[in-house]
Image (cartoon, rainbow, N blue to C red; front, side, top):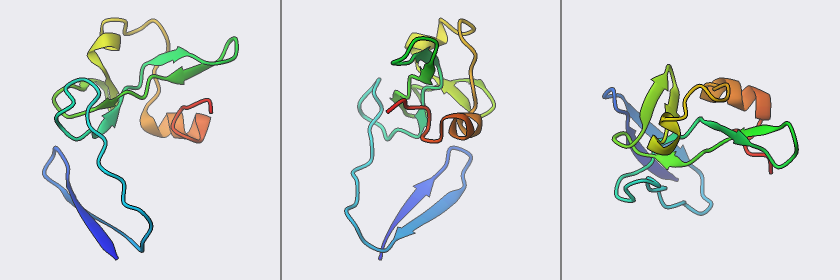
Length: 104
């Protein structure tokens, strides 16, 4: 069994253990490329089909993510465009899109 220790920005410690399978390398921030990504950009962008939307989902670290609401983050590219399309929290996005907002 492999375990991973994750420390949250608020000081909590999470032990994440699995029973095998390949262990993924931590995803790095798409902006700085140096720190581990802990958030995804929640800005809505056009989907593949007309009238549909998905979220940007650019991986972001603690320092590069701009918090725009409770449990809602954006990359600096989309932070300046805030308000153009409705935003959803990670929980709302998972309930609406089922897979974190990706259209496949």
